[in-house]
Length: 139
Image (cartoon, rainbow, N blue to C red; front, side, top):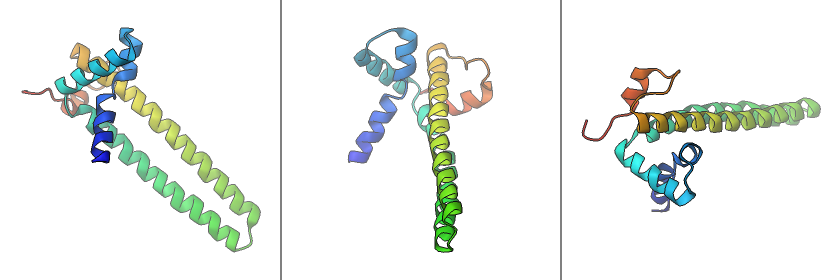
């Protein structure tokens, strides 16, 4: 139940930041507007965010397996400095993956907002890609 509420909240508030930036309204109104746009264009933000999450999770998993696992093996083999360097590289890589995922999510949210409001994908986005992922209710 708690997970479903968290998912519903994440979906309902997905467009809040672009709405706050573009429309100059307050946070409560931005949540309400985000919910309206979500109902109007159901599913698109979930599909895109799921894709970003899957890719970034896969990269993170490989980084943890190779970086942390390799660091542990190096420590056990007596290569303390090299093990510490591998750990540091793995942690740095994980932080970069988190930063990239947040950036991609923000860009995606802005693109979804533009499409939801204007009915046209923003410049630089493939029309077919956005439209295929973004199906209006009743269409």
